[in-house]
Image 1 (tube, helix red, strand yellow):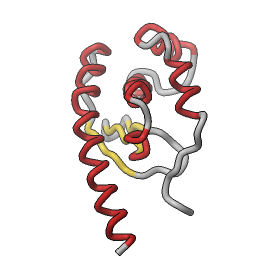
Image 2: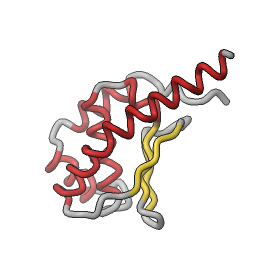
Image 3: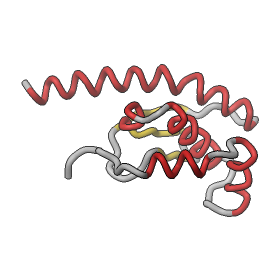
Image 4: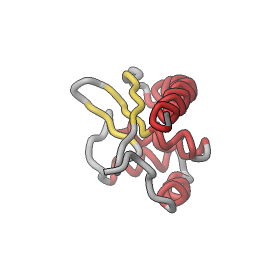
Length: 120
């Protein structure tokens, strides 16, 4: 029963995340002039997001639903920039600076508390 309740809550959170993600991803993809990737939401132990160039899929940590909206905005931009610039290099950070000048403040806030992902 406790596990079943947790699964229901997670499913509800996932629906809310996808509702929030769809317009954000569309907005950032348009601004970056790239096709919007497929979206996934799942529990992740150590990352806020990831993307696959091969499948053009952006995956977001379910825990983002519990963070301020600015955090989700930053992670969406971060992952979509990876579809243009794979490594965290000067060009990558220049794009973040150009599109979301306060990104480092948001990242600091996001990382101030550890990810409360699935237990090991």
